[in-house]
Image 1 (cartoon, rainbow, N blue to C red):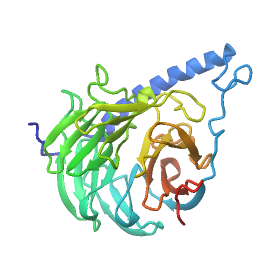
Image 2 (image 1 turned 120 degrees about the vertical axis):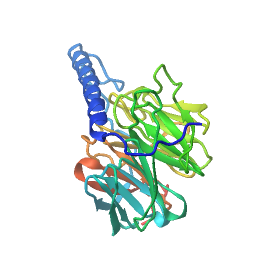
Image 3 (image 1 turned 60 degrees about the vertical axis):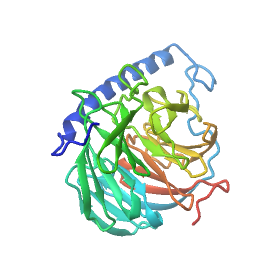
Image 4 (image 1 turned 120 degrees about the horizontal axis):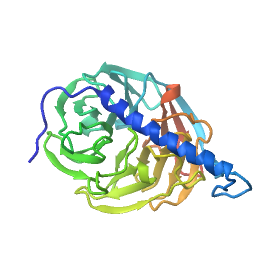
Length: 334
């Protein structure tokens, strides 16, 4: 059985810059195709005349903005016990209460990129190929390193989830999800057989979530899909399609953010559009959330839900966590 590798991980900057170069090359190609389609007078999926495209926000949105929490250099967030919010980025972590008051902050020994709540009020934090566990008081309890999913491809962790005694790491470079026991023992990979090189993940934005029923959900960004897997890596279902209109996922690679309600509803976030959508577990669009309140230039949007039914949106370009009530009688107590 493959075990963790002790020692320091490689630099984050080099891995991410390579990803971003490929990402922007892909975006440039898509932009050229868009310009060509406009010049040819092609219609978008919504119709409406020469060169027209659908309004990405033309759908029900009766959400309410309840709270705005300023944060520094944010990259990811997670909701823990008593709806405490841990935000990571830069070189550390900051814990807020559910109303946005800072409880405490601490530094991490590696640049953090992903976080998920652990047992007993703790949090797991990961970055590049490193992972550690911290108490809510900021005390480091454990730290270890992931092994590469493929030879010569150093992990780039961009999402993290926990199911019982298993941790799941969304590896944008390895194009799959690593499953490890909380003591650092490797168990299996998820999604590595989705294609010749695994999942299609063109950019360093790749999310994974644990559902209440013990299944694993992830964003297959290059295919514009949300996928549901068993913990041992069997694909159980998927939905999503490419498009600019509501109910589709736009751009080169979306959705980038993912969160799940206990009742099975799914929240997605799309970079480049700043669109937050609420779906059934089967992929039926229920509502939009916070339309035109989220930065359209945001690349690393993350979403989360809390015990009150509120939807939290991490908007990195403006350094804020936006807290919404989804509306329509679907939770979000003030």
